[in-house]
Amino acid sequence: MPFIRTNRLYFVFILFPLSLLYGIVVFFRNLLFDLGIIKSEHFPFPVISVGNLTIGGTGKTPHVEYLIKLLKDSHRIAVLSRGYKRKTKGFQLAVTGSTAEEIGDELLQIHNRFPEILVAADSDRIHGIGQLIAKFPGLEIIILDDAFQHRYVNPGLSIVLVDYKRPVFRDFLLPMGNLREYRCNINRADIVIVTKCPPGMDELQQQDFIRRLRLWHEQPVFFTYYQYGDIIPVLEEKSGKTFTWQNERNYANILMVTGIADYRPLKDYLSQFTVNVIVLSFADHHSYKPNDIRIIEQKLATLPADSTIIITTEKDATKFKEIPGELDKISPFLYYIPVEVRFLEEEDKSFNEMIISFCSEKTVIL
Image: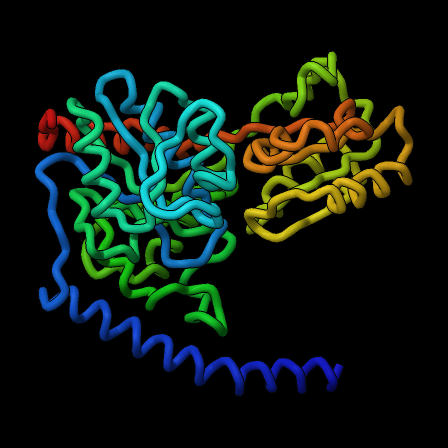
């Protein structure tokens, strides 16, 4: 125990000064934007930013997908992101056959779910918006994924996500913690959404959480949770089996394979169906290689074949589908589970009205 305490103190003394230096840089960068010394560009049509204060794992992709479903039938929309960990440079449009290496795994997931909308990657959001406008006349709305710190674009509506289980008021600046900037900067947001909440969270708990956020002005605050769907084979042609939790609960072992920032919500959900959830966790945005598949095969071989299933996320499934030849031994067991966002206490009605009203007032056909 003294050894653990010593190590913790050591890391605090090393990381705390680095966090102070990082905080100074972030403070002056934001100040330059606030004073207009560094310019932010406005656009004469609806631009919605979905972002966060922390690195990874707050649920941006499911919330972007919620906005897509809300708006896609009444507006021509596009989603623009930097395409984290893609291997390409510059502006990259998602097309049939695009890969995670070309546009990033999160954008690939969005493209696969909504092939009818425009999905593009560009680390320079202003350049990316310009490309979308030039290439697609009639575009009405652009949703920026993970753009809260990209202040060169001044969105008409900024949504910031806060993880219920990793709240900003219990976190520290990088590298000591996970905060990209000071938590007070949440006040730049127009809407705050607290994500991954327990479905039974009551009003008193919600108000206590809002109080701890210490908002400077009365931004609307919403609370959401994950709704998991029925599981789907990663490679349907090699599975030949339909599975739902409702009609089959005889799996004694679930091997959960993920490459996401926070696998705990999924593990908590799966624990309802078995007492034995075995976790194989890879780094966030992990690209699966043959050696990784061998690791999964070896773990699977230690479990009874007639009572084991492999569950992964939809984001991971997009990358598994790119290497079907490597999955021969695990594909009969390999499924993914889609997730959707739900609002507590029917707050979706109020949220939807805000989004639709903003888009209706601002929409300009380009």
